Length: 587
Image (cartoon, rainbow, N blue to C red):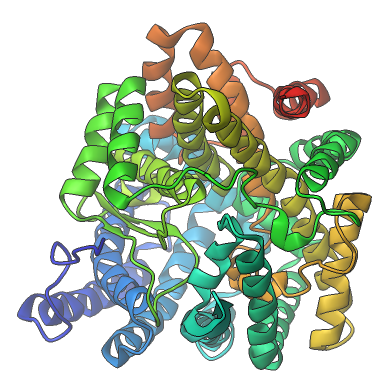
């Protein structure tokens, strides 16, 4: 249940790490000098662009090789000082890389015949979307000096705030009463107790979690205020109408797609409220469903798994979808790509990191044996399979929009759950159905509450520094608006802004709606798979392999889907609604 990072480096003191760090700095100096010399005329422009792209892809492959080793080492142990030192050094290097990139971006934006140049070269055609995006987004770029200064200042601002939040939450210990005994456990383990079969354990864990957050709320509020304040300032300086506008451009998603998706969700919220009210009835919750009961199993003999059982289940079901997906999962387990053991000092949130330089992935989760843990593992392996499909792309073409990344991960969740639904009978089938509806509802209702909260956060942070009380009140208000009367108002989750790391990503604001998009889009993809299994698998792999080279709207059109259509989102939500109705009618 621990990963191996030897494919990157054996240690920060190893000769390989030191040599690559030196080479990376030398490469950056060469790029800086080359851009200064060459990005100033249209002479031999096609060859210049090709040369620059080759240098950029090579530099970032080596840079990420170094950075990801430091980052992953920190994620597994936040007290590793050498990882922090390496991260700081590499972040300074990344800040320096901004100036030549901006100079190049401004230069190609002056080339009137850029489209002709792109068509004249196979390599440039391959990077057409990347180059075109640079030109289209040039209006939001400041001067080279300003952008370089901003990048350096981020290392003393948002990057520090992000790291501080991660350290606070990953080292936070929670004092929980279990079987009349006080136990001090990592936050990740306490949060996983929301899936425990014992009501008292779930309630005690929730109350202990809330108490633990109160110990770090002031520090986390400072982190959040610092990050969002910086984002607002930079968005305005660069000319974006809002941080959301910047996010949509970064994620290659149109406002029309987000607006129609959100409108369709608002229409269907009553169906999700009905699910939560029914679950409250089954759990004998008289005043609505308490937040700590959202993921409570409905049977005391709920499904539990050892890590070995989870591994076999995932490999089998991935393999049933396609040989390539099954082989990928088997390889990930066999070659120790996964760190699944909960422990103090380890990052609480699950993730998957694309080690593009070595064409592998690394997956982090905190496995305690619940069905939800199995689904989370499948989710992160879905990201890993997406990375596998992108392995032959250059670095700049291997970065898909987050909504599509979440589509790939949630699609593998669906594969596992649907396969298990077909195999199981009786109460086990009911448990899996409830888990599926519960996870879908989380991606719709809870994520919508997070979107509402972040929208309000940006609105209010513009004029004031928000206190922990402000943030807690805003979060509860957002949850009430999203969940309606289906939740017990005495047991909400006012600290969701503390435990969700996504709020603390300065470069990825509104990292909430991508989960909703991923859930709804993957539901439609799974229907297409069922309709024609023989042709869909190849089509799906192709879809993933080019996902870093076009907008979401264009990608969807490849599958004959229109993400700006209200009918599309209503149809997808109808699939989830049918599952809710099956749950409501289950006897």
